[in-house]
Image (cartoon, rainbow over all chains, first blue to last red; front, side, top):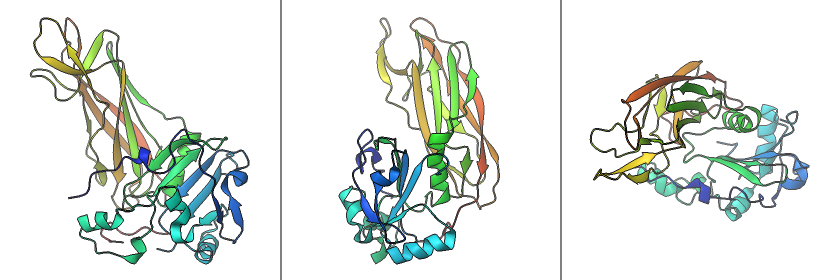
Length: 53
Length: 267
């Protein structure tokens, strides 16, 4: 039996809250500050499994 | 994306080297951020700690690759960086990999939903999809909005004997998997002189259900037929049960980038 669905409202940053600061290297190895790189634009932040498989 | 004034970031646990190759192979210019070790995703509370358990439930053996995986999904941020919407999926089998997920999320910004409408004297029904397009294994959300004229209500489930509850049926379509509808909780109504309590909706109520396109790619465009049945009553009189039919169009888009596993593949 599949497990019951989760309440995704409770997983990760909540709606109505500022997305936390994230600094990670990009594909060129350049450290990216997500909010700085947005440059006051709206943004989509996609979490995905892996580019490799 | 840049032209639309929207920044796009994609985060996975892949190394910079893997992301560099992936970006080069697929001509990706937006940032693919490397969260090797999944520390940031863990800090955000996005790691699916139940993935092995989930897989075991489907008879899939443990796999070291499946540790530290995030729930697949998208956060939509406004210009101030505030989360305005989250779109998450339970599993990676039904996923919006790459193009599909991003196209769907872009739709949140760029398309106001085109609703099909069936207006009656007491009940108006509208229905729309959250994306005008789908890709293989993409899950779309269908919203069905029922507006009941003041002084009237429709029935939730369970409906009392002899009354027809609000029901949505999606006409079968090859390769389309349909989940059941989620409605807000109906509220209790007790009418003087009638012994039974009734569970009703009034005003405007929106139900949602997930549609997943699992047929082979190349399914093309469809008109999704939606039948909504209900019975509207006031405190003193009931109308005869009624049903309306709506159609919402959806168009297939090719997946961007890498191929997806086949439906039978266990990853």
